[in-house]
Amino acid sequence: MPALLRRCRAPLRGPADEGAVALRSALAWSRGDAVLPREDPAGLYAWLPADARAAARQHADELGRRHDLAALAARSTCAVFAHNLDLLDRLEALTRGVAPPDAGDGPLRALDVGSGDFHYATALQRFLAGPCSAGRPVELVGVELDGHGIYRDGHSRADHARAHAALAGPGVSFVVGDVARLALPPQHVVTLLFPFVSAYPLLQWGLPLSRFRPRRLLRTAVAALRPGGWLVVANQTEAEFARLGALLADQPVERVRSGSFASGTVPDAARTAARIGSLWRRLGPAIDTAVR
Image 1 (cartoon, one colour):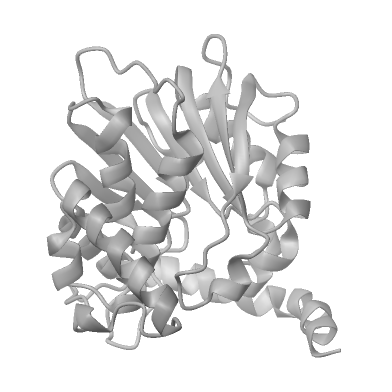
Image 2 (image 1 turned 135 degrees about the horizontal axis):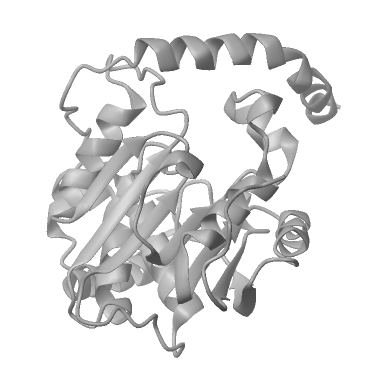
């Protein structure tokens, strides 16, 4: 019953959310460089039973050595570090054995749409710098429409996102804006981690229904890709994954692979049980991005 009541009440917040988003965007609050909170990494996986904790730590150490995660471990909370490790692991599993996009002689360009505070920037950069780029430099841009929310420390979401981008390393940046209005070169990889393809999660996030345009979002993401480029999507549920497939049915992409994105090693593991990741490849020439 409480869940049903929340679903019924969510649309009623629409006018307030509309005003709040407009106010945040107008103020564009920033306190400058945010200091990322950190915890002793010895507490990593403290929420797991002892036997599972040992195995998870061993795997984390292996990922850390392979992907140079020392800076992330030294400047993040245990939960953020665990989420980065898990995302890196899930992305590698989803794309293992699939020929990466051809970046030619230049950098591999990647766009992450709906980045939030971009706390997973390091995981995404390391994934792209691995088999995707074959040693080439990576240019990763994170984009968030609602980037001016204010956190407890007085910094904005964008302040934190830029700090996470800087921590991830050279070539990683973050912008606040509507991805459909950005002038970007063709991308080799576009990622959408838990995009709003149904209205209720968007309302729960605090965005009004006027911002609910999943078809436009996905058309923009596909149009941003070079032919042969990857669209990587993670959905919260099987129903969202089915909706994603329906929205992409008329787009020039083919599904290469899909699989579980569930995790047993993050603090909110129970909430990840139904998650599905999917990998799509862009077909054909560039298309018009306008949605009519």
